[in-house]
Length: 297
Image (cartoon, rainbow, N blue to C red; front, top):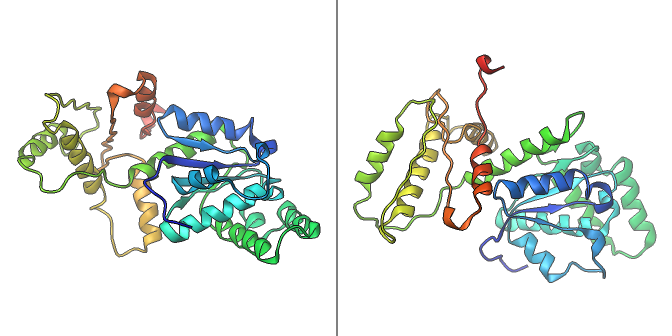
């Protein structure tokens, strides 16, 4: 598989259509779109043939995060299993993130191919349509992704559940710093002035508007400030922990986006505002999680 070009999608959703198309998949997809996340929703039941098409393969390769929604009959679909193999390959070769959802199934069922997952694999074997290598690849993909940290629905409401997934996806997508040009000139003073306006400790909501003629560096300045807030938020944490622990810590930090002290300072970066609908911008702002206090409960 060739190395993918620049990611086009933020999220690739893989699901068994007959299980979740009009259920949690539809809720999650629309919630992702509402906060400005570019999501690709595949429906394996609309495809024909024996191999993954080029368009679908490109969608997986060009996504930053893949979310397989493991339902009871997910493994009964050869298409879902082929998608899962591609996700694992992208993860192992290029570091693509996989964030699984376990919808009315236990992670151990996926990981060890028991219950309906074991039955599905045996059904595929008994058809004698697939090579031993294909079956091994499917089982290996289920084992690897089933062992990843993900979400279990259990007894929770679907609205609350999908909101949590969306927040976590936003955190993952925002964890990387925004790209800025090298060798910037006369930016430090502007950055310092904005950081002084934001303040070291505040619980207030602050909106920083940067205006001026086109081409003077407004977008670059906003990106530098945003990156600085993210960078400062990680300095309070012990870097001797394992990378997995660090990943969890950064997720925790980003739950109060831009937190730099014990108070909750949140930072949201809205780009290309002139090209986006006001509803999407509002939803992105509202999606920043709020730190609840006892006074509000």
